[in-house]
Amino acid sequence: MTDTQGDPQSGRVRLFHASLVWPLHLEPIAASGSEGRYWEVFESRTEASHWRRIDDEFMEDPGQFKERHYREFVSFLPYVQRFLYGEGRSRHAPSDDPPGGSPMHVFRRKDIAGLRLTLRKGQAPIELEIVHLDLYFFHDLDVIQLNLEVRATDLPLDTVRDILFRFGRAYPSGWEEGGAGLHNVYLAEWLGHDGQVIARSDAEKREKYLSYVCEHRSPCVSEHWACLLRPMALSHSDEPGDLRYRLIEYQRMPMMAYLAIDEPRKLSREEWVRLGLASMLHPNESLPINEPGVIEFEKRFCHDRFWTDSEAGPNTRFICTGNTFTVVGDAAFPFFVDGERGVLAQFRHQYFVVFLIAHLHRAALLAFSEVLADAVNDLDIRDDVSVRRFKRRIRANFETFLRFTHRYWFHELSERPHVQAMYRLCSNHLHNDAMYDDVHDEIREMSHYLDSDSQRRQSNTVVRLTVITILGLIATVTTGYFGMNIIAFGEGPVLERALHGLLATSVFIGLVLFAVAKSKRMSDFLEALSDERLTLGGKFRALWGVIGKTER
Image (cartoon, rainbow, N blue to C red; front, side, top):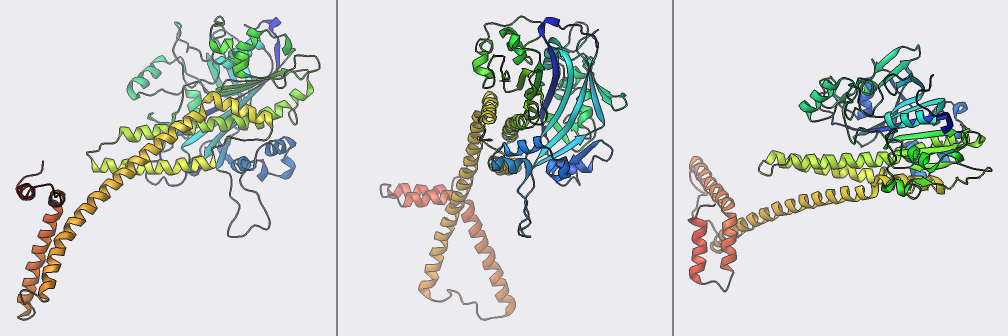
């Protein structure tokens, strides 16, 4: 590969790993006959695709269970372990209570072996190896996460920064004068094991994106990303499919990056800032020195527990902005590049789980908020059908949020200080706690509205029943005083008695229905009747209001 932009003096990245964690919102399954959970429906649609459901490492041959998997497992607290791997297995477990599985369901594609990126027009392409390509479904959540991990060796540092800035964009944010997509890679191509191109990006098709947004009021996803997710289809597209997704956030996908470079201690502060904020700073623009994130870069985004700036080391710096998580270390330090016990293994396992959970929280909370907003927008209080649909959606969302809180919402992931510190740093930059409180308050307010509306309806029913009971009490006391029927219908022909009974039933039904219809006014009359301060004339006027006035 020919380096067309790297500065040989700026250092080289001897080992580069990058992981995208792309959250998406699934729409409710609306097609007839599409029953089951999302991952079950997805699995039933994958005969013609390359996605295959996988079990975690615990379900495979014990000989394939590596020490890095064990270290990942013991890094987390028991309730996080149950979320990631399911409940513990025991030969003595009762037969009527088998251990539960993980609420996380993973699918993997193995037909794509590489990714060829042409970062800018006229540059030589760069080939990245696909480590794995996974799709995560979650029980009780309408959220999925696409995970793509790529690796490369011996790249110029400037080239890596350009990859971090341009890679992982769902669609172009605009177009340059020459027609190339703005800020994204010039061309991205998925490569099969035989080197053939499976799919390529289409950012240059400006009219496609413009017409899609104009017609659907929603962004269109680039073809190479849409190809990965099939048989699922973009929500508003004309592509067939009963499993449909839409974007939750901005087009920039959350990304993790691991860089093993030569002599990281020689990097200047500006180079550290550009590297840590690579997804936000254009490689060609000057450093915005008055930007608060630049001024307080070390305080806001860096965790330097393992950065000593000495020859003895360790010289590993963790940088987290929320949307990005970057680990930079010395390529000459064996522990940093160890893929079984070292920092590389931790990056691909413990820190990946931390990043995955933090963005799962954010994506789920955004999905809850979107469902609530959509339910309120569709509410028409004058339409009983709309009101009933609104109540069903709010109650269902409340139940799902309750399960999310008890199954997925964590504040403490690990007793290991560094793992927990990185989780809190990532979660704080994503503002997950504040977002959780906002969604919780929104759901509680809507729940209070439903409760108050139910109480209002019950109060109206009690008022009507009270009025009818009072009228019935008058008839009961009157007939009880005589101790017998006023008009004797116990004798006579059967037909005559049947007609009398039918007539009486009709009269009483009419009276009851009249009382129900006028119950609101009757309750006002009874209240006026019990008011000792009201004159007799005022009470008669209240009675006339029941009989004479028409309800407004």
